Image (cartoon, rainbow, N blue to C red; front, top):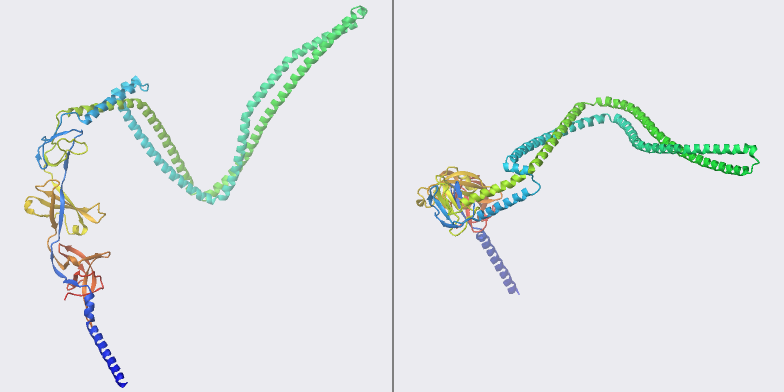
Length: 615
C-alpha cells in the first residue's frame, strides 16, 4: 500500500515538472509564434533627393482649322483624283463626277413645276384681283407692305412696352395709395362706418328710384294705348250722337203728328180717324223704340268713354304718383346726401389726422392710371392699324409668295443645271488632303464632306484628358519629348492650355497641345511632358502612398520594446504629394526624415496593426 502511494506521488510530481517545462517553452517562444501570424512588410527610409515629374501623353493629331469640301447635290463619283496626305493647289481636281442630272436637279424641276401650277391655280381663283396680280408681279408693293408692317409691328412692340411700363407704374402707385388708404381707414373706422351706412341707404333709395323709373319708362306706352282707346271711345260716342238726335227728332215729329191728329176734333167722326190714329200710334211707338235704342247706344258709348277716361286717368295718376315718389325719394336722397356730407366731413377730419401722403398717392395713382389708359388706347389704335395693314397686304403678299417660290425653284434649277454635265470637284484652297469620304461608284451627300483639307500654313492640335494630379505638374509652354523621336525630326509638341474637362465634372483637366512639323490630321503621337528636376526633402516610393476618403497618407513602422521582444506597429501619417514620376513621389507632412515607410506587405495593413519585418 505504501509502495502504491509512493508511485502515485512520483507520477504527479513528474507530470507537474513536464507541465511547467511546456509552459516555460511556450512562454519563451510565444513572441516567435505570434510573429509568424503577422503580415510581413517591406520598408524603406524616407529620403531626400530630386524628382523629374513627367506625364506620358498619347493622342490624335487634329487640324486647327479643317476645311470641308462639300457638294449640294447627290452625284455618282466617277473617280477620286487625290489620296490622303497629297498636297494640292487651289483649283486642282479632287473628284470626277459622272455627267448626268443629279437627284437634286430632278427634284428641283418637279418643285418648279409644282410652284408654277400653284400660282396658276391662285390667279384663276376669285380671291385675287387683277390689281393684286399686277402689284405682286411688280414686287414693290409687297415689299413696301412688309416695311410698313415691320414699322407698325415695331410701334406695337414699343406701345406694348410702354403699356407694361405704365401698368407697373400704375400698379405700384395703386399699391402705395391703398397702403396709405389702409392706414387712414384704420384711423377713421367709426366715421367710415357711418358714411357707409348713409351711402347704403342712398343706394337703397337709388335702387328703388331705378325700379320706379323703369316702371315710369314703361308707363308712356300704356298711357298712349289708353289715350288711343279713349279717343276711339269718344269717336264712337260722337258717332252715336247723330243717330240719337235723329231718333229724338223723329219721335218729336211722330208725337206732334199723333197729338195733332188726336186734337183735331173736327175729324173725330170720320170713318178713317181711328185707323189713322192707330197708324200714328204704331208710328209713335216705333219712334219711341228707335229713340230708346239710339239712347241706349249713346249711353253705352258714353260708358265706354267714361271707362276709358277712368283707365287713362288711373295711368296718368300712377305715373304722377311714381314721379312724386321719385321726387320724394330724391328728396330723401338729398337729405341723406346732406347727412352724408356731414358724415364725410367728419370722416375727412378724422382722416386728415392720419392723412399723410394719401392725396399725393391717389393723385399719382390716378395720373398713372390715366397714363396707362392713354397707353392702352394708343396700343389698341396701333394694333388696329397693324391689323388693317396686314389684311390689306395679305393678298399681294400671298401672290408674291407664289412668285418667290417660282423664282427660287427656277434659280435652283438653273444652278443645278450648270453643274450637271461632266462636273468635277476642285480644291477651293491650297492645302493637304486629310480625309477622303467618297470612292468611285458611290454617291456624294450634302451631309458629308467629300474631302477634308488642312489649310496651307495652318497648324495642328492634340487634346488629352489628364487627372488633376498630372495637370498640377504641368505648365503652359512645356515641350513634349516624342517617343521614337528619331522618326519625327521636325515635329514639336507644346502645351498651349490647361482647362477643366467639361465631361469630367471637375475631376480632370483638358490639356491642349500645339503640334508643328510633318504630321497629318488623324495621326497618333505619344510623348512625355513635365517639369524639370527639383530637390525635395521627403521622397518615398509611389507604392508607399495610399489614399482613402480622408486623403492621401503613408504608413510608417514604429517600434516598442517589451519583455518578450520588440513589437512593430503601422502608424498613419497624412501627407500631400508635391511631385512624382514613374517610381517615386515627393511628399510633405508630419515627418522628421528618418522614418521607415511601408511599401508593400504580404497582407492588408491598416494603421494600428502589428507587423513584422523581414528576417
